[in-house]
Length: 72
Image 1 (tube, rainbow, N blue to C red):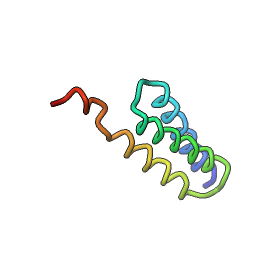
Image 2: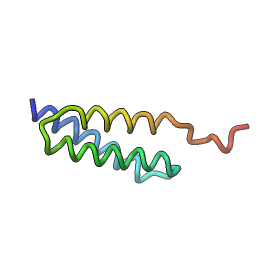
Image 3: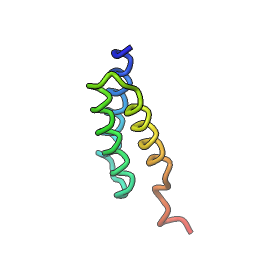
Image 4: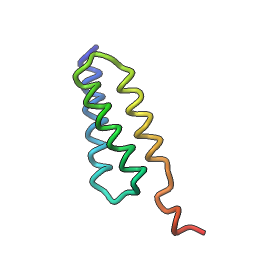
């Protein structure tokens, strides 16, 4: 079961790194960095809570509006 957690953690880390490399607001970047940190924790510990929290934080950060300033 630990190998499944490692695969999911690697996916979370990869998508978070991809999100950090694009142009983002500071909140979106912090959410991506939290996803990376919790993904690394889940990669080395055989536990699913850091993976679930990391995915939740990353997804919540991704749902924030990127074009909030340009929309009226």
